[in-house]
Amino acid sequence: MTKINNLIEKINGGDNPLFKELYGGDKAILKEQAARYASLMGDFSATFGADDVALFSSPGRTEIGGNHTDHNYGRVLAGAVNLDNIAVVAPNGTNTIRIKSAGYPEFQVELSDFVPNEDEFYTSTSLVKGIAAKMKENGYKIGGFDACIEGRVPKGSGLSSSASFEVLIGAIINELFNDGKMSAVENAIIGQWSENNYFGKPCGLMDQTACSVGGLITIDFKDPANPVVKEVDFDFVSTGYSLVITDVGGGHDDPASQAEYASLPTEMKSVAAEMGATVLRELTLEEIVKAIPELRKKGISDRAILRSYHFQGDNQRVVDQVAALEKNDFQAFLKMVVESGYSSYMYNQNIFDVVHKDEQVVSLALALSEMILKGSGAWRVHGGGFGGTIQAFVPQEKLGEYTKTLEHVYGEGTCHKLFIRTKGSVKLDL
Image (cartoon, helix red, strand yellow):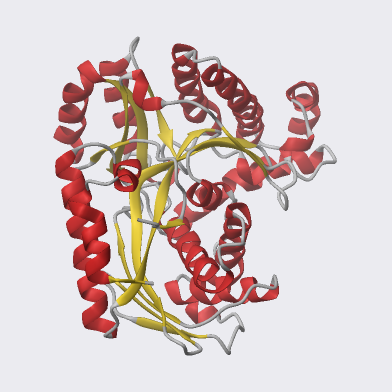
């Protein structure tokens, strides 16, 4: 733990190597980030009355390759980004975790009751309780702490604000009570477990792993209990392209739309099951194509077959994208980003919700992106689809035109210029 005044001095208005690694070299942004931490430390002192604290940062993530592949044990390419959740933390010597998140009421988690409670589903309380329960089950020490948290990972942005929060809590408990001995991958697995079992939401492991590990990584989920994580050595900044995520809005929470979303993994797995497998990863494209006549006779829909076709293509494309980046062939990589986007549109069919077919915010954003970037950049749906966000790699000379055009349609501030940051969810050692 370090005194707040000493931490503010070490941050030095953002002019220090760690801040530049987390937030880039723009002096105005670094200064704003320094003020952000100082303000949160002030909130912590006013709320909990302590002056000895530790600082933590946990990034959001962007999916770069492998759209809807993880739930069928496929491969993904993902990166941690410079939008993050930060926390000011101190142990409190009790059996209670107390958390105040900016814009939300303070809540507490007692470390004596780990029974999952359906009344707490879809709450931060349930996530914290689940993470503490699983860490204790895995043999780690847990304890009470106070935390003030402030988030810059927009909810609904496809940048995984919930996964960022989960691995932030895991990192805090790991550092405060376990000397940091838990690995980043185990932190991710525990976060996913909590989201599945305490939060009430089934999800893959890509989001938590990318947020926890940091950098640009490829993950192979062939054995989902032991995912293979490999760092990809490539410097996106050196390409002169900006990674832009645009919040296009849309998406619906009504039962019909939720069923549309749920149909993706369900339909993929229905093809696998009809062919004697559990998930599509156990099959090849050739086997699926050979089985198409029989699948159709047995009532498997054409859409399910097309989604299986997409899975096989995007799963292999991740391997090819990684190879292109490792050979520094960025143009080949961009070509595959566009191919992945077309595959999502035509075969995976997660670009618009057929229940609300008149609302095609993602389709429109992709059309505008193609109009500006064709031949010089790349564009694709980002994340789950059916609304939310798109992703684009934009050359510097077109960045102004691109953001102006997209924000003309979707509103000022909807384009987020990002970069891949090297650190995952970490304690800041200034």
